[in-house]
Amino acid sequence: MKIIIAFIILWPFAGFLFNGLGRNYWSKKVIAYKATGYIVASFIASIFAFIQVQNHGAVTVHYFDFINTATVKIPFDFKVDALSSLFLLVITGVGSLIHLYSTAYMKEETAPHYARYFSYLNLFIFSMLILVLGDNYVIMFIGWEGVGLCSYLLIGYWFTNGNYNYAAKKAFIMNRIGDLGFLLAIFWLIVKLGTVNYSEVLTADSLAKLSSTDITGIALLLFVGAMGKSAQIPLFTWLPDAMAGPTPVSALIHAATMVTAGIYMITRSNILYSHSELTQNIIAIIGISTALLAATIAIKQNDIKKVLAYSTVSQLGYMFLGLGVGAYSGAVFHVITHAFFKALLFLGAGSVIHAMHHEQDIRKMGGLKSKLPITHITFLIGCIAIAGVPPFSGFFSKDEILAAAFAKSPIYWVLGVIGAAMTAFYMFRLYTTTFLGNFRGTPDQENHLHESPQAMTLPLILLAIASALAGAIGIPEMMGGHHWLSHNLIPIVGEPVELGLSHSLEWTLMAVSVSIAFIALLLAISIYKKKTDEEPLTALGKFFYHKWHIDELYNEVIVQPLNRFAGFLKNIIEKQVIDGAVNGTGKLVQYSARKVRLIQNGQVGYYILFMVAGIILLFMIWFNDISILHFFNKLTKN
Image 1: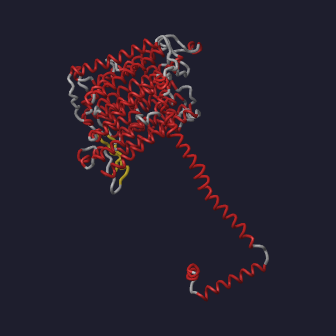
Image 2 (image 1 turned 90 degrees about the horizontal axis):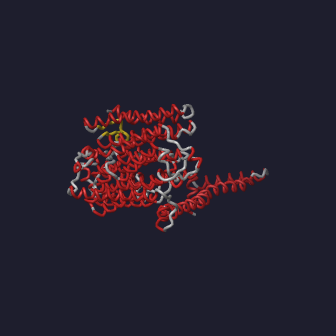
Image 3 (image 1 turned 45 degrees about the vertical axis):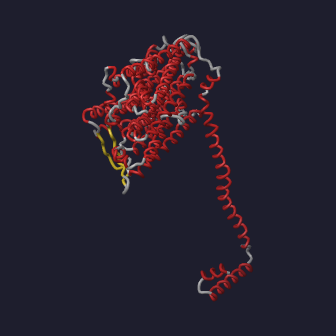
């Protein structure tokens, strides 16, 4: 297993080095084969690791001691168990398809930039693998920071565009805010327990050493880290702006890697959160609030990628709702199904953008159903899955979260159903406006419409199959299933919690949520099949269209005051105080030197006078005291 784990980690890193160092030498064909091949190899190794865990249980592999002091020992260990092995499959599996898709989508780039893109993509996968395989919070944090760096590089991939650079910096800074919370939680654990290893921290004995304040504080700080990485209120505005990167990057960030890190971390730390009801309530409230807020914004967006971006924020809110109500396996279930259908939707959007010559406004599309048949049918499957229509995957995972939410509080369930209805509405508004009706683009665009190449359509087909069938791993017992996922995660999250709901009530809740979602999607199709959605005229519509003006609020309340404060530090403190003191010292030395040098006037009489005066002074010192030090002491006393 030690060799298998090494291969899983090192293949993506080898791809990063190969393409990064050889970007000026390799052809695009070699770059594409190598970059994709390394991730596929890592996926194959991940399958072997998953089978090993299923057959023989969890495995921990020690490589070396990362930190070893008298009081703290942090080993560089990797752990492959029921949770991490699942994430390995998702990360490398979906990552492989995104790499394959990228080989065609990015073909217009020059070879050096093509290699740079794939080297960043490989490094992204490598960092995410470090994150999920690490056996302690410090190793997780290394991967955590790695995906943050790679997101900055990939979002700002087209660095000649100033707006894209701003979006990359925004993502980087917002993630640093969350990372500070994560780092403080690590320090807190070290101070209180002297360790950050999962096997030592996440035990009843260790938790008994912590006060309720310690547990709540650590859990909240870890959640702050999750808020930044997984885009929850108030640290969510970076994720929609991450659309500045290439579309496959959006799929990678939004589907299988970065944004799921927060859910992984909290699920891994579930014992800690189960001992802090306050933190769980906060997570649930922020989760459902984020889901509803992002859904209202998505309803009125016209950029195909922005709709999907806010959809991701909303779906992440659902996952955090699941974590907050204790449905850890349900949250992981939704992570897996979301990885498939959201990657499918983003790559489908990329196929549309590719056919439309980089047009992203859905008001200028329409009627693409016949022109892009594979993209159309696969995108439709993704929309059905995310809308929660049975028997597609999103139905099972979302229903599990909603059932747990109802058991915790019916209010959570009502709000969750409202969010699900909005999800169905905005996704089928997007589908209808893009693929149905009449084409609304330019004649030149219409003449050049064509289906994407096989390297792009094959990932769409495979992801569509996964989006349709992935729900099979979590079919509930009330429907005759076994819920394989829930039972598989028992070593991590414990036995499934009995919700206390009768089968008849569960069927009723399920029927209500599905019916409302189905009505919402039919309503969206009927409204937008014959008309485009122009800029809203109502006050509420404008409010949603302008994204609740949250970016403007942050700009006025946080960004501009910080810029003014930075300007004060730069222009007043740095230039006038610090530079003034340094430059003033230099000017004083120069001025005094100009004055003192006047003594050197070339007249021998002056030199003799000073020499005689010096000799007299030395004699006075010698005859009046035994040392110069005492002489100066007398001078200071007098």
